[in-house]
Length: 243
Image (cartoon, rainbow, N blue to C red; front, top):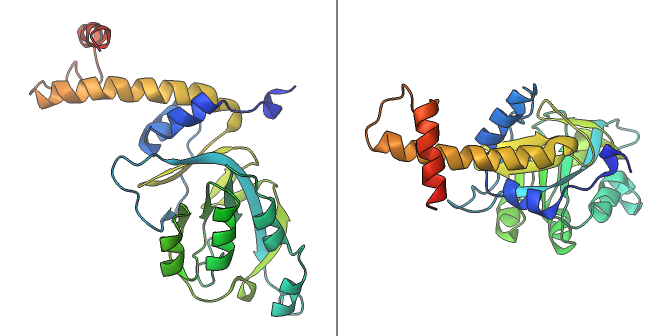
C-alpha cells in the first residue's frame, strides 16, 4: 500500500473536528503550504459555538462552462448525468466538493439533491458557487459551505464533466481524498498524507494556546508568553501534568 492509498484514522478525523481552521492554516504554513483556505466560501448556516467541525475526505465534482446545445433540461433525464451521478456516488462520510469556477450567478445544488446527499449519509458539501432553495437547504441539517444563494439552475452556467478528479475550489487545489475541515471561519483543505501529523500537532497547539490564554488573562505580557520562552514552557509542562 502506498502512502496515497492509506486511510486517515478515525482518531485523526476526530481530532480535526475539534481544532480551528485558523490553527490548521498555521500547521500547514509550517509545512510550507500557504494556499489551503478556500476564498469566498462560507457556511450557509453558521455553526453553533462549540459545534464540531465538518470533517471528511473530499469527493470532487468538476464543472466547466455550459454550452447551449449540450446543457438543457433534457440532460437530467439521463441518470448518469455527472452531477446526479456524483450525488449518488459520494461515499457516506465524505464531503462533496464542487468546482464552480467561483461563478456566483447560478446555483451548484438545490434542495432535492442536498436532501439526497443527507439521506445517503454524506457528511456535507462545499462549493465555490452558490446554492438555490437556500432556506429549505438550511433546514435540512446538511452541513454546507458555499458562496451564498442564487435561484438560477446550474445548467445556465455549468456543464458537470468529471467526478473524483483533482479540482480547484475557492482558488485552492483539492485532490480526491484530501481532508476537508470546515468551521465558522470557512474551509481548509488538509492533504491526506499530512492529515495524521497535522491533526496531532494542531491538537497540541491548541492545548498550549489554552494555557497561554490563561496567562494572558492573568495580565502577563506578550514577551516570554506568546511565543512562550523556556520558563513559560516549563510552567506549561507542569500545567499539563496537573490536568
